[in-house]
Amino acid sequence: MIEMVIVVLIMGAMAAVAVPRAMRTTPQQEVHGAARQIMRDLESARMRAIATKRVVRLSFDQANEFYAAFLDVTAEHSGDISETVQEARASRFLARGSNGGIPGAELATHVKFGSGQATTGPLGGSISDAIAFQNDRCEFDARGMVRPVAGVRTGGAIFVTHERDASVVAAVTVSGSGAFRTWDYRDGKWR
Image (cartoon, rainbow, N blue to C red; front, side):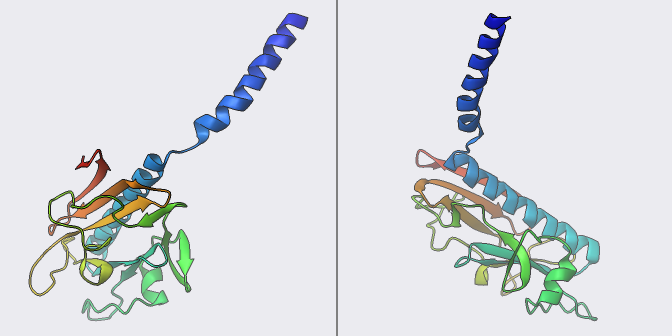
């Protein structure tokens, strides 16, 4: 019996040391998780636009590491969005945080918008901004397509990095037709 008690105590001490280490997340896991969450939120915005047959906008605030969804609430479905609290609440999703009373989502701790050490985007071309959408926002029309800018349906990309390790970068790309993909930057290449 004494031997069993000693074995259980030793196993308990080993578990007390091992479990916290196993529960820690790495910078790669944090950044990849943030990119996947942004992709899911973009997909939700697209589906909300299709379901309501109205324009839905995701607006990214780089300075506050925050983004919010807004739904066109005009009676005539004009697609005009002013980014008000009413429009954010009408979107009926993305309320995991708040910025100035606007419900939305904050990036995970230690994750920020940025391209870190990546110099080119996953689809080629240089990175000029962490949010590669005009005016840092992505809009979906009633068909779920990216709303055209100057008559052209172009997508964009959102880059996130770890504040403690600039070599850890992920991206979410959106095509003009509303297709999404997440990318990880490792060893100088996007995968």
